[in-house]
Image (cartoon, rainbow, N blue to C red; front, side):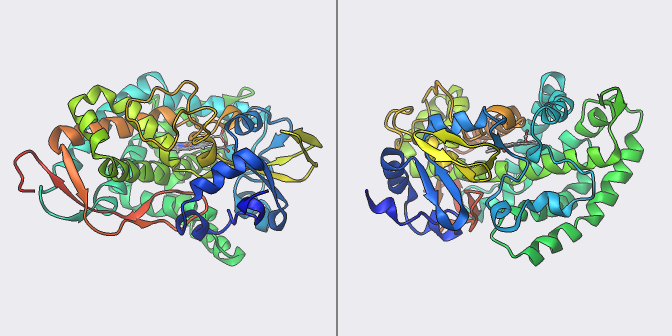
Length: 409
Ligand code: HEM
């Protein structure tokens, strides 16, 4: 075999940033696509087809024991901290999972999404209006941290005065995927009390409301002819916050970063803004804002010739599937016009595929349309600081200068 014989340290944040992981992953896809990692009793899954197979086979590959690498280290992190009877959509298997998905689905389709497009355009324009041409600033702090949480507040149906609080709670919840001790994880859960109080107050205010926002939708929803409990509403709302905020933040930052690294592709997009939809999907494929998620086999099975025993874990590395050369021609090339047929797996695949995908796509597409209309070019002006995470792929600081047509270069 090859250099991949030394098990890739996918549970070490440094592994993702201190070297280029993509040649290692290409090697794994060729030579060891179901690669056993003894220190985690986990198989690393790197091929696109295997990732999709796992995603659509929840009866073998369960989410109930957790979907984070921390769940392997500490037992199911989220479930072990939340109150008795709490259900996280991310760690529920069918048939119950489908019922939970059914109640959140209307928030991400039809009139609810149409309403959000207007919000996204207005918020994007307001944020872009704060950019001074020719003046350096941190894109993450000034824009990427703000837009997703403003949109999530609109999605939830809470007003903008809660943006700062929601942002903090959501960041805390997302840190559960980080490389933390069990005590640090317990502290995060303890800090969520005020979020619970906030949501309970919103729920009381919205009861009887017929709106299409997430909280009103959940309050109107029924499972088996029963209204959802307040705990159901809390858990589904928390899941949406965790899943939708930091992910979209990193996609925004990555779009600005990757377009700056590929000025010819950016010029193509500026010349033809109709490409912004494919540019967003190409950015998702190219960077995979969520590196991967975990499943646990509930019965003995086989994948690409390797035996997996009940109780062992598989880690679907989306960032590898998205560069699988048997699916995407010239996968290391960033091409804003790439038509992906089949689609990348940046939003996962199958049973738990991201329900917020249409919202995330819309948000970044509208933002890019507004951005390039005002600023056709920009430069990264200092070190882009990557997030140290085994879960997220993005930047915590992104110094940038935007140029309008008239601004001095
Ligand atoms: C760039 C942005 C985003 C990325 C890359 C992303 C990625 C993902 C992925 C990979 C999954 C699959 C989880 C699994 O298979 O276990 C997922 C699930 C989920 N996402 Fe997203 N997501 C994004 C944005 C959003 C947004 C904007 C929302 C909502 C506001 C959202 C809500 C959810 C929820 C609730 C789940 C859990 C679904 C389930 O377990 O059935 N996501 N996301």
